Image (tube, rainbow, N blue to C red; front, top):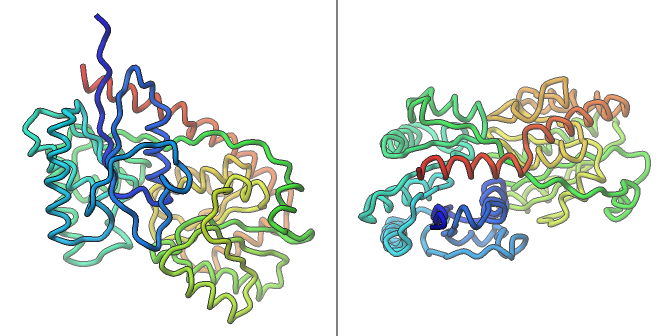
Length: 379
């Protein structure tokens, strides 16, 4: 008798363009359908967000539940909770795997109500302990996650620092955790001169790529401060920004007013091409899980400059394939200046980053990690 596939329901609050959506979509695509049978449940994106399922992963099928998205509303959340519980009763999964904070709460609670023994897995793609909330809200988040951790079979962290931070506040136990690095497909090879021309890049300028949502946690204000530092130093460079968000319009307005060496492209599908055309990658965040954009940058052979937050240090080895700095614009500009003036250093660090991405951040490794986990849990 043929062995039945493990039935897994993936639940994520919304598939907005960003790391968690990319990871979940690639899990849906890459796992052997004969071994793992997957269903994706998600909510709707906010009006100022690009939906990854509509803009990029149009091949991925998902069931949408109203109220599961980002916004918190007691009535909508309760309706989403009961809708989830009903779906789980109908689907009868072996494993419920939740992603992101809100889906982690509603999905795990709904699985308890569904009336059937189910294995619960939750992935922390980052955490909400720094940079999102303060005071009593952080304490509430910790209390909720502690409660849910006791009722979760496996907790996955996307980076070592993410795991350590969660354990430090008492969320889960060490033996519950696994660290699974995100894995990305290898990018196509692009002729640098051709892609630079397609972006209208000028000869004689070093181009710095910033890819991410323009939202408070990513600190676009700090990015603009860095652009101002580079301008004041007379460096021949330009920052290219791919992404939007609630601070997109105000960031563009300030950049124009101060005549900063920065260009805003909005949401883009051609991020691999942008990295291939660029010389350096930059991230200015207050907090991160393990940003996929920096993995993409490393795959493209770019040296990286980033704030030393979250699990960025799993991707960037300081003075190996880039620089990790404190959060001051001056420190970020100092690191960028070293790379702008030294093309040989850029090449050495870029190749080191490419080698590291092959070793630790492949799609094959991420898929194998999850397949092995699901099959082990279902024995």
